[in-house]
Structures are given as C-alpha cells and as structure tokens.
Length: 337
Ligand code: PEP
Ligand code: MN
Image 1 (cartoon, rainbow, N blue to C red):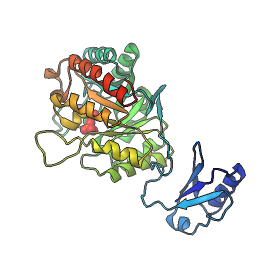
Image 2: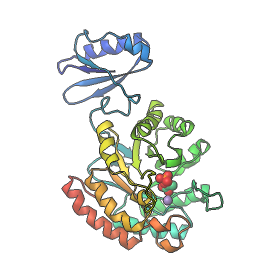
Image 3: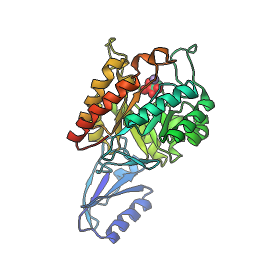
Image 4: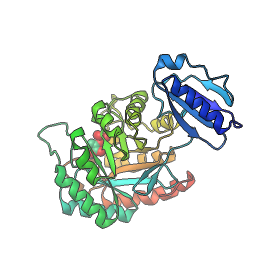
C-alpha cells in the first residue's frame, strides 16, 4: 500500500502516520516529491490489510499495490532515481557508456581496449574476470588477477570499473576492485547472491535473466533493495526466443516497461542482446531512442582472437563511429554522451 499525503500535510501529520505504521509492526519508505510526500508501507500483508490510516489528518488517499515488488516500484518513488557510481550519475542527463572486452585476457589487451573506449567517450571499463561460460572447457577468466588488472588499467586511463560477480563468496574481492557489481543473466535469480549484495552499498547492475519476465526481473531487484542497497541499475541484454539468427532477442520494449514500472535506471547491452557485431550499432541507436540511461558494449582491439564473444565485439574504430552517431541521437532525446 502507498499513502499519498496531501500537499498541505505538515511534518507532524507525516510523523503521526509513520508512528501508526511502526505501532502496527510495519515499515515506512518515504519519498518526498516537489508536490507531496508518499509513504510506502512495507511489511506483512495481513498487517497492511488491517491498517486504517485513510482518516488520519494530512492523508489524501491510500492506494493498494498489487505487485509484490515495492521499493523498486515507481508507485513508491514517482521520480527517477539517479545512482551515483564513483561520482558519475547513472540516470542523469549524460548517458553511461560502459565498454571493453567480454573477458579480461591480459594487461596488454585490456590497456589497448581501455585507451580506445576512453578515447571514444566511455566512462566505464567493462571486462569479466569471473566468466560464467556455457562450457566448462571454455576460458573461465583470470579471477582475482583479472580484477587487479581492471583496477590498474582503469585508474591509469581514467575510467570506472564494472565487472561480473558470480559467487557471494567473492563480494569482498570484487568490491575491492570494482565500482559496480554486475550480476549476470545466469544469476538474476540467485537469491543468495542478491541478498548478500543487498547488504553492501555498492551499485549493482542487474542483468535480465535468460528467459525472465519483467516481473521476475523487478522482483529480483527487490531482493537487493530489501536488504538496504538502493543502488540498483537494470540491464536489458536480450531474452531467449525461437529466433536463431541472433544469439538473443533484444527486448527494446523492456526499456519502456521498466521506465513505466520502476524509478531505477536501465541500460542496454546490444552485444549480448544480438550476438552479432553487425547489429550492435543499430540496436544501440534504438536503445538510446527508447530513452535508456546508458549502454554496455563489448569492444576488443582484435575481435578475431578474442577468448570470448569475439563475434559480438566491436573494433575500436566501429565503437568510435557508433559514439559519433549516438551524440546526435542523444541530443534529440534530451541527453548527451
Ligand atoms: C557479460 O556481460 O559478459 C555476460 C556474460 O553477460 P550476460 O550475463 O548478459 O550473458
Ligand atoms: Mn560477453
């Protein structure tokens, strides 16, 4: 349930409502907007059903919420949330551009990629050190050595680091070197991992599961927020459909759906979303036109020898060309790169 306070409600009115919630064993989530205050009620469904606050002074109306996710919901927090990542506001006017190789392979490869994406205008260096590969015989990543390389290279070049975490045991290690924890598609419903990330305060980028519905995805984010970590960013990366020409079907409509249902920022991954480098540029353009808050793009200095996802990696030259195009599209959308 949400309680919409009247624009004329006083602080005392608000405090009384909050006290009533506490007395009933419920929690209040406050959202103070320009016009009015909205109090989200969190807790046991039966207790919420028995709550009587609509006649209290300063209360304009109460609205029942049918979705299970609350903290993630735009009903609870009507204004867009901006997630600060090491000084960069994701969800603000400037689009967040995360770029780099699928996997960290060596210091030389990473440095070459980092310099290229920085020159193109990215603010974040991506690269996997723990790789969730379909086959156990494929390259599994450089683990902690890879994390250290990411930090060293990013600091040298002047970028922030986003990298995947696959196991809750690695929260400390990854947190030491990364600015954003990336939860990959295969772990979107790893609830133990999500709960553990909820206890941190570092931003989490939650990728959409391989076949996850929007509702399952938003509920997964609720796990992180319910633990107290409000710094969640969604990432649409394509879903499994009957189509085989592309690796996944990039669901651009998810951007509009998430913007409608949630206040959290959403970025788009056209690399995993298509699996084909030829389609990365057009889909990135479409994502910006759909009002996403940023992009995560695989860029490799030599895609033909990449240890993972070479087929969907842009060369530095193509990444640069894309960034030039995005400059124009972003302006039309009231954004910038
Ligand atoms: C990745 O970003 O390298 C990755 C493995 O993505 P996803 O979890 O979307 O497959
Ligand atoms: Mn990849």
